[in-house]
Image (cartoon, rainbow, N blue to C red; front, side, top):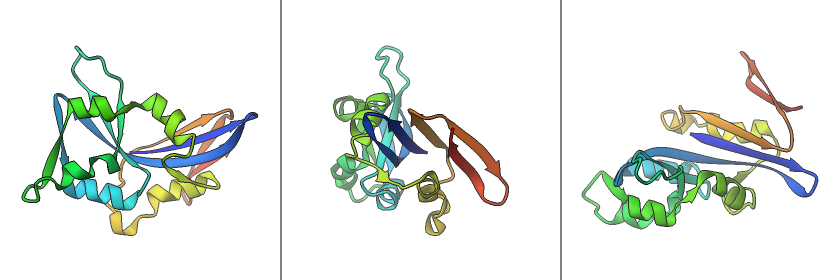
Amino acid sequence: MGIILHIDLPDFPKIIRSAAFQAKKLNRSAQLEKAQFNSLLSAFPKASAYLFYDTNFATLAPPLVVEAESLEDESKEDATTDSFSVLSKKAFFNGVPLSLWLFSKMAREQTGHSALNFSTAIEKFTNRPNDAEFFGGRLAILSVGRRLQLTRRDETGLDVTLG
């Protein structure tokens, strides 16, 4: 899953930033595949994260973002396995609610990739010949301050313009 954040406000510098997520269900723990983890980190360095969603109604936790780099130690603990676990306690302690992460980390350029325009940002996700299986997911675009107009074009794909 990818996200592009666009902010264009009078009192804030205009930005377009992108990041990649792997969404995982969190119920006491989440199992992460090492190959997928390594692919996420190498394809989107400094712009990759896990989005944990809690299915336990007792906690009522929002979707939590845990940056992939912070899980590298866990991924290397047991070299004999193809996966590793992240306990809900770690996700709750190290995670940031998605809504806060977007505006505290991504908007302040502490994570994510910068782009000059939407085409460049979208290409981060679509032009991956070596990672054909990696990004077949969804792409969310969030714009703050300006309205987006989306047009689907058969020849060129998605055209994003500001209204």
